[in-house]
Image (cartoon, rainbow, N blue to C red; front, side):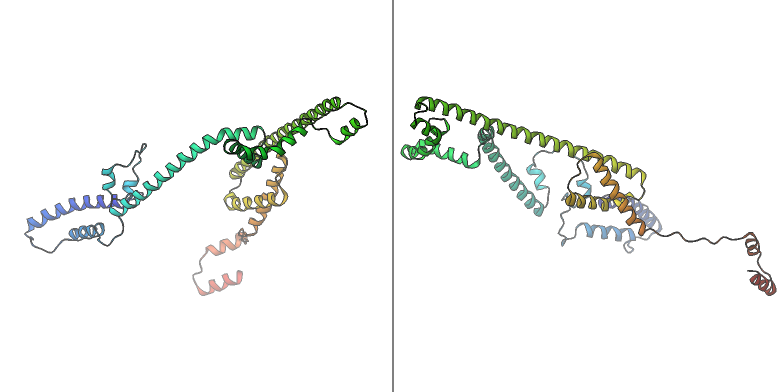
Length: 330
């Protein structure tokens, strides 16, 4: 019964036993053998029953984990476990199921909490990415917001150095070179402030432009890297498919080839182009093929048999004299 489960085999055996037992009972009653010892069929059925209902067994006969017949039934849609279904299992299985259900409920609750928190934090993360704020800058923003709401005096003290820096960044504070020109009378203070505002605005715009240029370069590099990896994967897949079709010894070489690929990429880095990937794979394949060939069985030499020798060998000697002559001829 290839492919059948133990329970199916038992059921089929019991069906055969029932049929055979009925025939055996009819034959016994007709021959007047009532009250005889239990038959072989009864003994087999008793053994089967003892194995199915062994009181010391740790397995639950109804547990799908140990019942291949029950576990083999496919169910496309599974709902929640009902109370009646739970009671159909053994006590040990019920405890396991209840523990798993409790774990699932706990994980579901935690997942719902995390999803809610992530959704609330999503706008903050988007703004931080938009303005390229570091984690430290985000914490400072939260701190200032909290101080403005709970302790205005502390917020003012915390904002004092920030405001001084803002005066400098907006050009309202003259740098030393413009202060010297104002002191020497080369330029008025108002003109110096206007010049400094224009100068700082240009520097700020150049900084933003440079940052945007770096972001675009990083995105382009990521796209290039992704495309390169995809191209290398395609080359590798096509190469492996070809080797599977052309080399009958590929199953013996596959694991070793994969091992050497990882080693070469680790030592030399990822190949730069498709041709480099192809060369790397071909070189590793040749190396593995040489390794495998050393363990291949060597062909045995076959000694040629001449026509005369074969004709003489077919003739069986009938006397000792003929045997001696045949030995001398060889």
